[in-house]
Image (cartoon, rainbow over all chains, first blue to last red; front, side, top):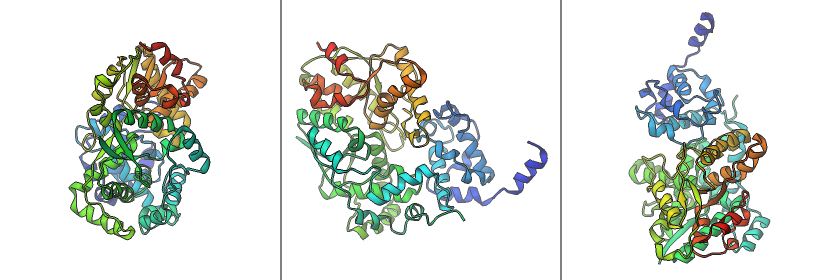
Length: 174
Length: 282
C-alpha cells in the first residue's frame, strides 16, 4: 500500500467507532485485544478461507476503520466460540464480531442471505415453514404435528425492535 | 418418572425428524416424558441482527416452560446454547430482565427465571443405566459433540464430551479419538455457501477416517447434516471416500436398547448406517 493511500485511509478513520462498539452488548472488551492472533489461529473458517481473519476485523474496529461495518467479512464467523475459549485477554472475539454485525445492521447493512433467513423468522416465527406435507410425513413416522406459530404474538414481540426495522427494510442503507 | 418440555427448534422438524423420533423412542424406554408447546425460533439466527430481539425470542420460549412449571430440554446444540445463554444472562442481570419483561408484557407473558434449560444428552446420560442395554453394538465410533454443547463455557456445558463417550461405551462400541474432534462441523456456513460447509465437514471426516472410525455419532442436527448429508456431497466433489456412517447418539442408543431401525428413523440417514449396525450386533 502506498503512503498516499495509507494517509487517505487514516483520514477516514472514525474515532467514535470503538466507543460505539464498547456500548454494544458483546463489544465491551474490544479494547483489551493485543493482537496475538490466537483467535485466527483457532479459527476453522480461516483454515479454509484466508479472507476471513477475526484478528484483522478486531484491529480494524479498534483503529476506527469503518470498512468493517461495510464488509461481509464479520458475517463469515461460524460462531463456534473456539477463539472465545482461547483468547488470553478475554476479548470474546465471537461477541465482538456479533457487536460489529449488530452495528452494521443499525446502519442498514445486512447480507442478503441473513436478511432472507430473518424475514422468515419475522413472518412465521421460525426458520422454515412447516407445511401440511411435513406434518403428514411426521404423522407417518409417528410424530406429533408441529403447530403453526402464533404469528400475531411474534409481530407484537418484535414491534419497535431493531430486528423489525431490519427485516422490514426500514434500516436500508441510504 | 421425569418430565420435560421438549423444544424442537427449526431444523429438526424440517429436515432431521429421525433425531426427534429416536429421541422420543429412547425417552419412552427410559420413562422420560416429553411434553409439547407452541414454540418459536430459539433466537440463534436473530443474534447477529439484533442481540436484544434474540433475547426476546429465547425469553418468550422459556416463559412457556415456566407457565407449565417444567424444565426445558433441547435436542439441538444451537437451541440449547441460545436458550441457556439467554436464561443465564437474564437470571443474572436484573435490568436486562426488566427490559425483556416490559416487551413480554405486551404478549401477556413474563420471564421469571424459574425454569432450567437442558440438552437431551444430559438427561439421557443421567437416566440410562447398564441394565437398560439389551445388546452390544461393536463398532469403532467417532464422537462428535459439536460446539454449542460445550461453548461458550462461560454459560453452557454439562461435560458433554465425557458423557457422549460414556454413552457410546455403554452401547458396547469403542470410542475413536481423532484430530480436531472438538472443532466446528461447518454447517453454520451453509447460509453463505455450500462449498465452505462441505470443505470443513471434509476435514472432520478425513481425520475420523485416519483413525479408523467406522461410524460417527452426533447430538445436533447441524452436525448431523454436515457429517451425513454433506459427506455425500464431499465424496462427489472431492472424489474421495470417507465411509463414515453418521447417526445420532439417540439412534445408536435405541439399537442397544433393542429398538428396531424403523422406530429410530435410520432409513432417513444419507450415509445408511443400518447395514453396518446390523452387522455389529452382539
